[in-house]
Amino acid sequence: MPAVKSFGERIADAFRKAGLPDGLFSVLNLTHTDTEQLIRDSSIDHVCFTGSVSGGHAIQRATGARFI
Image (cartoon, rainbow, N blue to C red; front, side, top):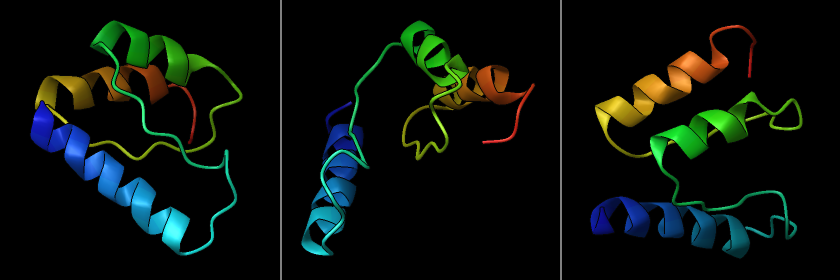
């Protein structure tokens, strides 16, 4: 997990350096269950994911009914 967390933080750093306003991009380290629950929320418009294949499947299950 440390490599995944580091990669997510690097993406966030790049966005900050590019001037992205605070609050538009967040790095979250979640369980697969928490990931599915969060992504099912209609306020989530985009997802950038780094992680395991099973984590990717959790995202696929959560987004299968809608386009994000």
